[in-house]
Image (cartoon, rainbow, N blue to C red; front, side):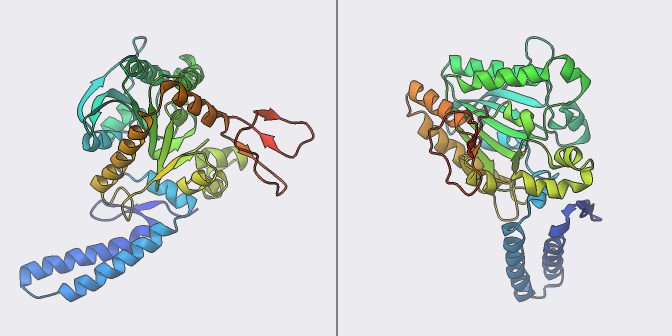
Length: 353
């Protein structure tokens, strides 16, 4: 398996394919510093390197493998949920606790304004430094987090406020404590309640979208995945451990899982691919936030115009149509189809909700 990352003397986290790009950036910085101190004109050299840098970025990020996409989605400098909340929303008022057990730091909820529109923000947050990561359990929410999220979303529906979800998690917490407190039941309840919650819901995967941990707040009218994020039923390492009994086959698993935004859009499992700045969100967080904000604003503008009954019917139909596929070179099934398995038929239809 390829080496995932390394550290330079400056402490910059590097992915393997980014090393030539970073060397060019460092050379530009060196020439600019030398030009400022010596007064010599290095503008032609700098312009030439910048041109090569743009070409290298376009080539590298235009043909990322699924595994490289996973690594970019996990990049330590990639903007996290609280970063997007700070850059996108105004008047954020955080709400705490699940009224039953604890306040899960991995699940961030609160009222805010998006371009003046009141919204309820529900976000999975990984944490930036070591202390915050431990407090947020590295973005892996406990049952308390999903109960907290559902309570806040129901509160939003009570006041007719749209719900905006930001997803960045490798999955729900898999430990004994979560099982003891009913993690499967908490996520299942969220899936059911969100499928019929009477308010517009949009969800955006900003980094990792792993398993039921992501799905627990991703049942929505519109689902978007950022260009270099991933959304999958299981992490590549988890898939490799099950199928090949070793996490060393994570790259092979990533290829098989069809977890990139492009593959998900082809399969009609998501509604939109949210573009990122050249070189990924970690190179220009402000531009990435503007892109996410524009997608959110446009999605909500469209959804609030739809009557409640129509919106709920469309959400139900969207969920019932997820997960269809065909074999043997036959044509895909028509848009309206019945869930279930037909005996003796080549077509298999399943439903995810």
